[in-house]
Image (cartoon, rainbow, N blue to C red; front, side, top):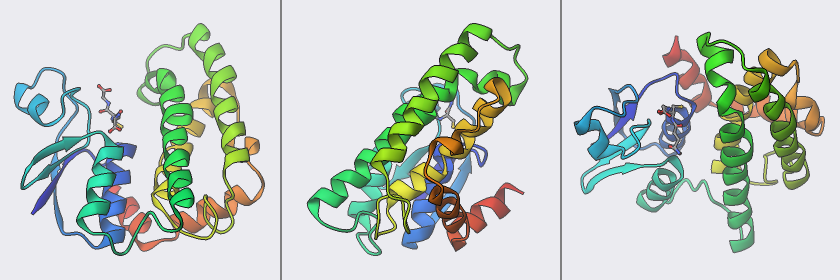
Length: 207
Ligand SMILES: N[C@@H](CCC(=O)N[C@@H](CS)C(=O)NCC(=O)O)C(=O)O
């Protein structure tokens, strides 16, 4: 059976878990903190980050690579529906959220969530860079009913698990509500994603 290594509080872990729940893939959860020193863990996740997926053929790290593996492993129900163009757009939206929303907001995570001292230079950069990532997402995405349009895809799962964390960071450190950068229908879209059984199970497992 596939083993998902990581921690419930990791949004990337939640992305992979939600994809497996949506696809009805059996998996086992293995508690693993991120670590840059644990040599055994580094054989599964070379950067020491979570999550990693242990498969019968070996481990895979990097969330988007894991999602590709899962889509190939169990194509139905598909989380990359539509034409070649629509599928590429779904990947683009997912990558955009990872690069320009999540990764862009990460320098503030320790202050916003883990109590590290605030760094005004970092906060000034966040206030400039992350809203830009959101404004451009607002132009790229549809949000009606799903982020890419007609089909629920992995882009919905990635976006719904990256935007709220970035918003938490920006609201705490910069007093910026990132949702105001998106069209109005984005709030209903996020509520729709969170209403799915997979999202509810993840929230319940977090306790
Ligand atoms: N590029 C990685 C990012 C994963 C990631 O940043 N995970 C966080 C937890 S949400 C982590 O392990 N942080 C610890 C660290 O950066 O050392 C992916 O796509 O899976």
